[in-house]
Image (tube, rainbow, N blue to C red; front, side, top):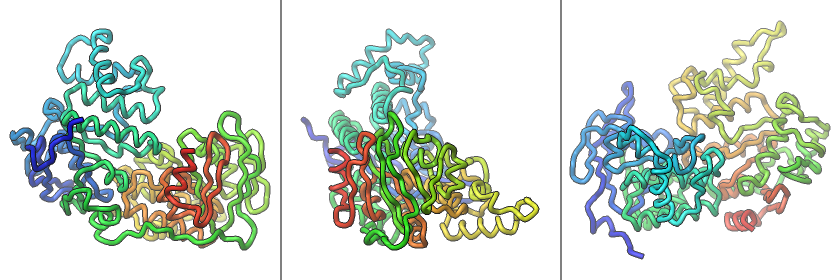
Length: 504
């Protein structure tokens, strides 16, 4: 296997020089520059709102900079069009992969290149060899005849990578590529990244999972508030130093919880909860003041358990008690009345009204609690609640009237959290509470959850982010094939132990 040349031994395939971009007087990028070399992985890191997405859009031709230039193979471009970027070998794989769900894997791989080449006629049979060739070259096990809609997240990502390479991509930007992947799938992706490097492909890896990016990257570039902070060899950095460059302060991700609270009655008791095809015989107790982690591979049943407790997927049998009282959870309304809240995995489509304001989203779940004796909405009370949560959760926005669509991932997650805190639940479940959230916001969100637990709430965190579980949870339940496989407590909660138990 040939080792790609180091940056000092090759010419950059892509250069970004002094890029400036403003939106309505707000500076998104302020003189940002970087170089990208063939056969390297460059991590682009920074907090939500630091300018990463804007830079990617400019490189791919979606946005035009106010000033600066993009240099490809020594040719300067004041601005790129998307078609120009693709012809130059630049491809972006976004979080949603931008695939056609109703087309086959083969059709998705070759169709975009056919459109870019302005072919008037498309022949699936004639194009299939190109798709087969790239799949074979990368040594992938992809069913070219399968509809993309039926694929796992990992296979959708592989399809998007093949689509980029069949268009002769020399630069691939991967936006949060490991967000929905299991630990095993991440290892497979990294092995593929190495094969891409061997081909001389340069990759920009955008991710909030700092341990992963340091594992796969050769260099790291950090942006903060639209400015370039540092570019350094990954070998000289660790997650704490990258986080410090991102935030301008030391970020504490150490274990911040003690023993499980044992005083007082449990707030939630689950006994023999079962749902055919999803999970079987699940029993556990959640105490006031406790943060309980639930983890497992995708498809293990962890999400279905939460959805049953929230009335989305009613269990077929079992008993649930809240504050000692048995409750029947056949609908979401049943769960909310029982004092159970749920922040879903897909906050954008399931947790928020994207075109509505921050204020409307915050108060959406608690209007009944903000009514006067005449059943009208208590305007003063809602304003107090909204302003209090806006300030307490430190949501970064001009004001509460700003649309949720305008927020970064971390701030959107805070709005979802605020919506449920406004209902004052006894139990709050959060599925992937910091997915797509930068390290600074993650620390703050986990601190908020610990504070809510300390004030008497029972909190359940469903996550496959082992460091997050270690930092925030008193106990961790490991779900495997629909059953409770392990309960970890105290010193038994470590990143290595969680990953071993999940993969066993």
